[in-house]
Amino acid sequence: MNRRAFVAGVLSSPLAFAGRAFAQAPVFVGDMHTHSFFAESKYHFRPLARSMAGGNATLIAWSLVGDLLWFDVKTYKEKSAPKPGETFGWFQRELGRIKSHIAEQGIKITLTARDVDFALRGKPHVVLSVEGANFVESDAGRVKFAHGLGIRQLQLVHYTSNSLGDIQTAPGQHKGLSDVGKRVVSECNRLGILLDLAHCSDETTKAALAASTVPLIWSHGSIVKEKSTAPTASIWRRRQLSLELAKEIAKKGGVVGLWALTSDVGKTLESYADRMLELVEWLGEDHVAFGTDINGLGPNSLVSEFADLKLVIDHWRRKGVPETRIAKLAIGNYARVLKTALHARG
Image (cartoon, rainbow, N blue to C red; front, side):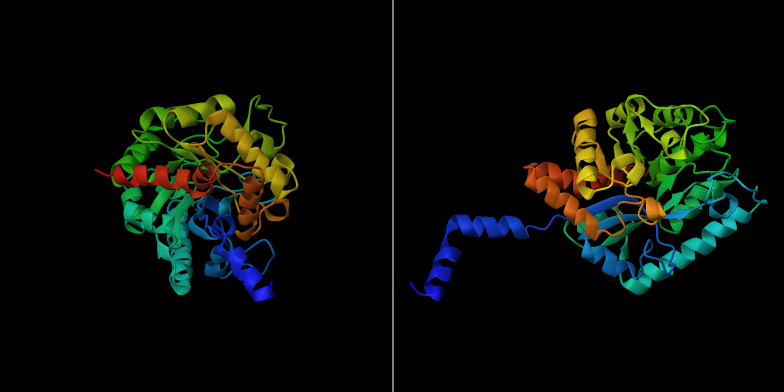
């Protein structure tokens, strides 16, 4: 048999065809929490379209850091208090820069549930998100303004105090949600903005879960069975979510995203992939997703490009994880909870 006949025979085999189809089946990727700061650094990406294409990423949340100018990026402690209107001005300027880059890259912004469906079919979309709703100040009406600018995901708090609720890494003042915080939750539910509980204290998390009529997310972090609450514990340990609260988020239909912090998830993409599978055992396959915090962890990040997540998916396939589960973890869970929030608008 000559080489041409041999190759033709192999390609005509149903098993060979099935193997090729399996290898080529696209798995699109969603990420509930990423950043880009346009810096010339190996930890930051530009242009965005190329980075997304390299990992089949079609639904990513680009998070604007709402309190970036007011905390120390080395200690993660508040360094100054903004003057009235400063956080609102910063939010508008930075969002304008982000949207300009997205338009320049020819990427769509996620505004409706239909846009999420397009992302699930392979059309790249960005979810405009804010990490730390400090721009609200004491005016919950600004949530509607932000919605009009395209914001579809809102994280209540970050590393500095604000008028909505308390953070994990500093003493609290609200002991839950403030009146402004409750109005913000209500407005997000009404308008169709996905609420993000990352960085919230336990009390604020519980209060937001009670106040919301739709599922919420914890976009990035990790889960531990026994959480350290000591004020002397490292920042990343205080940033972890207790399994008890993670189960409450899941019980409401929400999703928890796993970050890529090496000191937490290990130093290989395989260890990251296995940690996600452990979270599946704890919460169920419908409540875990990528929340890498790309470009937010610097040299401490295991994942620097979306292409890394393709290797995570390859690892799951080698371990025999069912394709339906892989699809949920890779993008489906995030897409589902986002669509639920978008449909909730009154």
